[in-house]
Image 1 (cartoon, one colour):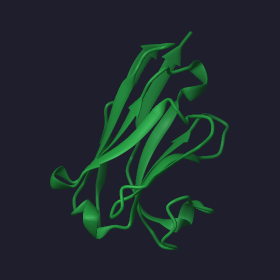
Image 2: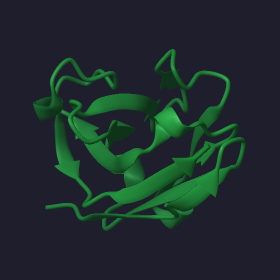
Image 3: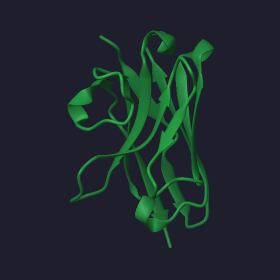
Image 4: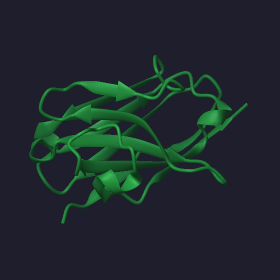
Length: 126
């Protein structure tokens, strides 16, 4: 069982930045994918960024492309998400997930990912 702990959320004004961190209890290189998801009240959980841990290749949702950057530090078993130019519509609980069962980091179903963190809240005010 792998534990994931997110941190770095908070409240910012529109245009501001935050960096989320996700620390895994296991070596991230032993997992094929790490992803960041978000869920706003009344909305489904959606994937916003993912990284193939072996190649470093990244994927992004169109809504965050060019503003969010996912990265990893395998030595620290940590994945980051740098979020710039935040907008009120980015307000959500952000979750880290690890290890895709399908081997494809862009999940077609939330069940694709084996491990989940508890989430960190991001609130963006206008």
